[in-house]
Image 1 (cartoon, rainbow, N blue to C red):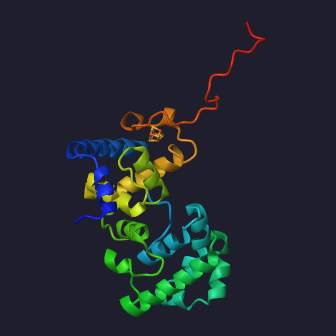
Image 2: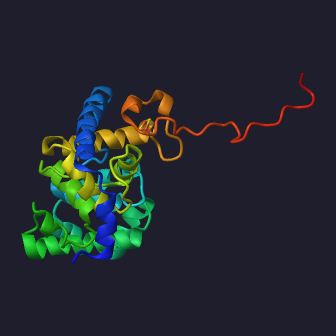
Image 3: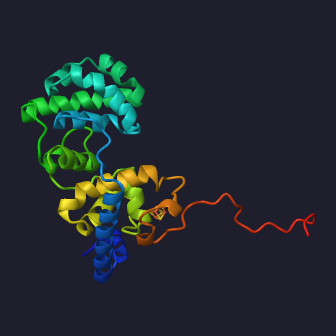
Length: 245
Ligand code: SF4
């Protein structure tokens, strides 16, 4: 028997023709955004799976630009999982302080790298199930890592992908794992990593959280909410001033 919660989730799934229409719309969204942002890529700098893993842990509640600033010198100093695992907690805390939540992040990085050394010979594993057992690695991080470091297709639902998937009417879910499950089948596997890069870029430049710029949006005709830009005008029409006319 299906659990109550499952039934509610299932009942919100669009019907199959609607899903087909959404999949076709996603293909056009990808094509349009690819023309608008031909250089879209992951904003974090890295040159190996290990570096990307560290950068993703540091990126929690921090801008990618700040993470890149911090990792520039760190990646030159620490090159292997064993080296990261050996950095004393207080030293690492000091080095990553500007990324915020530095105590927890330092602890997570050291524990994660220790696991890599003990269980995977210092290498970052290529399987989702294995990545998910590492400290600090959830589905978002694992999918971004697989897609960008190993070329294994997946949807990493970060803040931009989650917000735009909702705005574009591709899901009504709010939980990132459920969003991933619902939108992944809509996107051909060859386009999944690129979809994320394009959506992240569009989310940063145009469809921002506070003020989506719908009049300038290249996918407005493919969006069910093309009038989301808040106006400066008051919601209700002001009373005609007694000084006018
Ligand atoms: S039309 Fe507006 S809400 Fe829709 S994707 Fe574009 S900016 Fe975002």
